[in-house]
Length: 452
Image (spheres, rainbow, N blue to C red):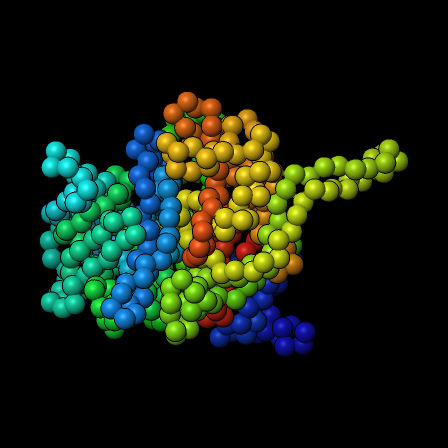
């Protein structure tokens, strides 16, 4: 307690009620709102254009066999920021599930895949690309190659250029320039801004063993341009649920904050922290080393069910409510925190309990390949316990009114079941919290957003 107080006196920072302290070069301090805040635009792809996932390239080469991670995501929601590459502004999707920053060149070849007939006209859904030359030159070797589990891929070359995100510039940053691809984009972005660890940049090409390099965010904090953390606040679409999709909106409070917190309101008493684990925490990846690669955590437990009230008249007069009907599953397993995933992917046994708790129960629609429930169904509670706090999914994220079947009567569930890892907490979870990615302390912190 004495050392904490001394730290506040030294740096002149007043602690916020309920806010966790973390170690920095200034001592123990709370997270503070940063001026390095980049608003994010949200793009909802129309239902008629929903494509299968763009998943992250995670491979482990063992005995000459590639073992891909089974990351699946219905990619109908994109969070977009503008970055400046040299003197050109490009729109890119923000992604905490990969590490490279890449974009297409002004000329790139969009190709069809082998299972698409010769009459198929490729449409990669990528916006205008980078024109001209990179000021720092290009690398002849290795090439830039990323292969994805839904059969999409990007291919091109590495080069060096200044990259600015918000007001922070990574000088002579290594980037990927794509000139050949089979992709499934949203039509408005030219590439990705990867915010993962350097380790993930080594998993490139057929051999998966090139030397890693520092991605954009790593370059920024190593050069002391920002503190070594960033935070994300995602807001769901604003306005009436009946708004047409396919629009680009800037909803209240969607931010990428570099070096601190975004300017959104949170429940200060809800802050919780948890360790970030190495890539060996996910057995399906078959890594032997414990390098930090992506943002992997192990929640303490999961809560689901429909609450029922059981109070006596006297208790009711005093405003007391006792809730029953919620079940806690204490099985622990690793999950990725991934802003690039629209849905959350969790173990089949857990998610099937959630589906059954809808009234009427959710059902599988083979035409869509996912579980849906009637759009007016009673929505159960579903939450994840981290530390001593439970973070509940919002009802509108559990039953997504903007993602309907062709009849319009059924809405998509924001959590989908998978038979094996890696598991993911995506946008359907992140829309209810502020998430802090703290590299210096190898931990994540979460706080519940106030209602917006």
